[in-house]
Image (cartoon, rainbow, N blue to C red; front, side):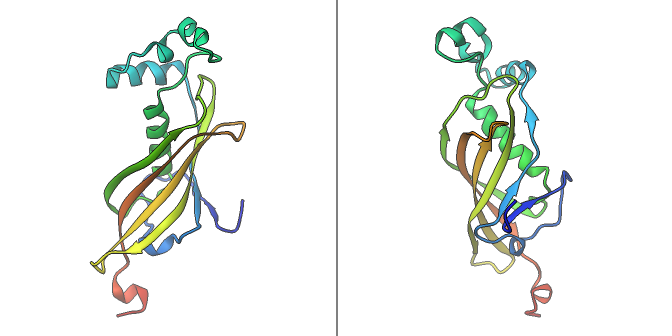
Length: 166
């Protein structure tokens, strides 16, 4: 773990404010092992019944080592697992996701976790808010990056008196 990497306990809601993370900080979330249930439930939830995800023979014939997880499932798990660190307890709004790239398949049995580096931390025109843009990596148990994307959030700032301005 580098000096700028932070590991947070799984907490759900936390009390992290915009000022608590700076450009270059890396937050690592907990992992999850992908199961058949993840793929079937995601297909049912979204209507994405593509054979690569649900038909072992089809996926193998397509050149994969077996059925692969849906790309949006991998992205959603990364977003969700990072929320378990508690850093999003003061998020006012999710502003979106950009630059999604699927770099390697996620297979049943893979254990993935998110790592997110703060690449933008800027104040807004309102002194009570700031913006974070995080560059996510979805990493498997072999330390291979399966997916990358960026996501931005509007976050509460501390009150002026807590920042030494009051």
